[in-house]
Structure formats: C-alpha cells, structure tokens
Length: 453
Image (tube, rainbow, N blue to C red):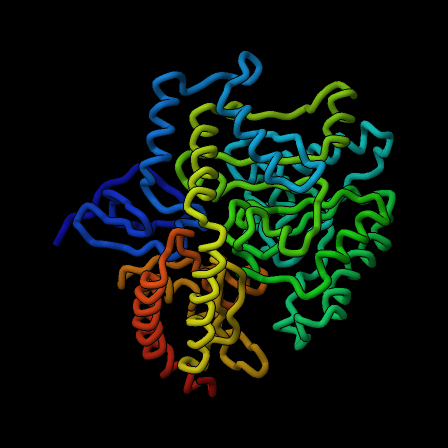
C-alpha cells in the first residue's frame, strides 16, 4: 500500500487527487500512467484542448522577449494586439478592453466601472446591481454578493452588501414552455418588478449569464427573455452586464453567447476559455461612452498587478487564432448537437435523469427522484459528488453542482474541449453510461425504500 504523499497545499477539502503528469488534446495522464478523458475541460476552461503546440510556441516566443511589463510603465504589443482582436469580436460599440487574470476579477471590474460611470454622469444614487438566483459570478466579496448560491454566500453574508435577486428562468422546473415567448417575458418582467420595488433611481445594473453556468447547469433562457431584458435595461437607463466568463470564447457555437439572440450588453466579461488554460487571463469589455466618461472624470480607480501581462496576452491571442484556424465554433455547434442528442437519449434508460439542456459544448443533465414533479434526489445521497467520483474512477472527468441554489438538487456539466470529435463523443458516452450504471445500482435500494425509482 502506497504511503500518502505529504502536501502543504490546501484548497477546498482534505480530498486528494493523483499527480498530473501530462495532457494532450482531450486526455490527461497521471504519474502512474492512468488516462482521464477531460469531459469538462477542467472547469469549462480548456476550450482548445491541452498542449496545443501553436499556442505553446507563441508563448515561447514571447518568453524570449519579456514575461512582464507593468501597465503603468509600458504598453506591450501582445496586449494591444489582443485588445484589438477582442474589440473586433465584441458587439458593436464595445471597443474598450480591460485585462484581468480571471473571472472574479472581471466581474469586480465591471461593477466598479459601472459605479464610477454613474458617479461620472451625476447619478450617484445608483449602486444596486440586480442578479439572479441561482447564479454564480465569482468568489471575491463583490462578485459573491451578486452570486445566488446559498452554500457559498451564506458564511460571508455579514461581510457583504446584499444585492437584490430575481429568479432565474427555470421554465423546466416551473412547468412552462421554454419555446413560448410569453415564458421569456414572464421571467424577464420580474426584472422590471424588482427595479420598481428597489426604486429605479437606485439601480445601477443587471448582470446575467446569457446561458447559465455552474450554478444553474447550462440553463438556456426561454424565447424572448434576453431581448426583453435588454428592453427593460434601456427603458430604465440601467447598465446590462453579460457575464460570459464561461460562455465567452466559443463554447456555445458563437464567440459570445449573447450573439445567439442578437443582444448587445453595455459591459461584458469573460475569462476561462479566453486563454483556454494556457495562462491566467480574463477581460472586461465596455462601451466607449462608459469608459470615456470615467476617464474624463479622473480615471478608473481600479487595477490589478498582472493586467495585460504580455505572456498571458500572447497565449490569449494564439488561442483565438486557433479557434478561427480550426473552425472550432462550427465544431462546437456540430459536435455539441451530437453529444446533446446522446445525453437526451439517456432519459429513456435512466428514470432519474430529469432534464438535459445547454447549447454547443456547454451541456448538462440533472438528476431527480420524480420526473413528473422534478423533485430532487434526497440530499443525503450527495449524488452531485458521488457520480463525479464514480466517473473519475472510470477515467471520465465531469463537473457538478447543486441545482437548487446550492442546497439540494444535482446537475452535471458535460463540456469537453471544442476540438472533440464525433468518435470521442462515443467514448465519452461509453464512460458515462458505465458510470451511470454503477450509480443506479448504488442508489436503487435506498430509492426503493423512499418510494422513488
């Protein structure tokens, strides 16, 4: 029996994992030679797969020149080139780019820019940022105040300024038709009601994930929702912030998920797939008018040491070039449709799969004890943890969260890299079925006692 390795690292728990040796494409190997299929792209990060030689070479070339140049001392070519590329890919009018190192930093930057903009134009009473429940916007205190995930936020409630929330458009749980524009209006109008209740003069912005991320499991908004949200924000002069930390970079089949509805925000943030795991990188992209007003009023009172790091920016630029050169937006859409079809087919085999959802290669399935009522599995089973562990033991990495605001419910994100082929979808499904079969045997006796499955 191997003696447990001593580690001075700590993250979220006492749990340990094998030591990573190498990664190529959609596969990863530990130091003992065990292979894992990266079915979640890490945390929905590694969009172009692991160890892309073109990206690595671009980073090597930059390392030979410089690895750091502080933004107050130098402008750097990689940062300028990447900013130009991002502006070109962003909705019209969003031409100003502010680089950060990750998603939480990007969200913090967005809400601080929004607040300074309000001050710059003489609307200092505006400070409230409305968000949704459930949702996830980051782990720093400002971003956490916007997050709707009770198990993550509750311990820090005394340290945060509480922000108003509206329900996420969970039509599949509420028995509403997601394809009916009336459904989209029903949920979107909750924003208008919240604005009126809070006092329009006090509301600064609304932040929304165009397609839900970890907290709501690839939740696609109902028809008309995104368009109506834009109308409401415009009507009340409230800034619309798109949180594309998970969706930005092509995972849904468009570079930004908001493109699916032809809706433009005032500010957008993205990270994760932006540099696809090759270096810490994120960005806030804002409308010219917002940035110009803030800069004219004394400047943006905000910043991070590694903003615009030339090595990270060289990686980000090379990643985007690979997305374009390999046609990965189209591949994410095509292969995503195939994978979603297979996942949906699992509902016929397993009665505890209550919903399959998502777009492109941002897909999820949710477990329930009763498909008619969508009652979740008993919380004590910790299905969201157990199935992940079973899959991991079979060499498949998937990602899970509690569906119902962090307290109960179980959904699983299946989001392999955008380079995934049709044959690799078959491999993912074989490993997933093997894992679900084991899970079914484990929970069946308990569920029978409960009158479930």
